[in-house]
Image 1 (cartoon, rainbow, N blue to C red):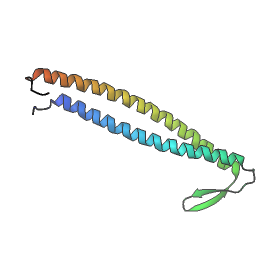
Image 2: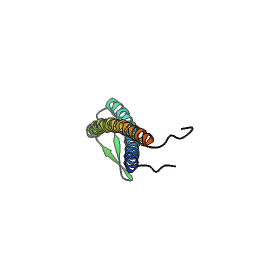
Image 3: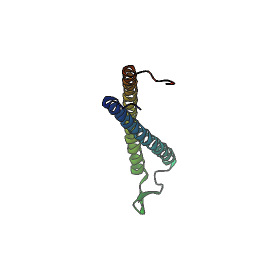
Image 4: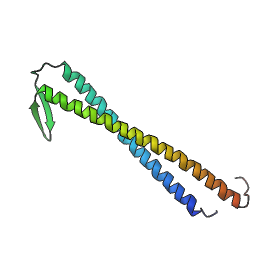
Length: 124
């Protein structure tokens, strides 16, 4: 088996790194999307409650009573933050996908170049 040129090995390493980063971004994005759906459901339900409804917030190992409006505002702030984080992750995902495609093209060119320099092998 022929030795892999260092330039090709470096491209493959960068490609693998980009793939791993993309998977991490996708996973984080899915987690944020799930949390966003939960927050949106909570906002909808909380908006249905009367002003004087008893609302409890989880604080560590305790439940603490909190007024409806501050609790609702806290949820809306969390929703806004999640939406912002999702936009950032979507941009990162797009950039990583572009980077992966560019690296794939570079790898293919490097492989073609390497094959052109070696004698032809049967069955390949």
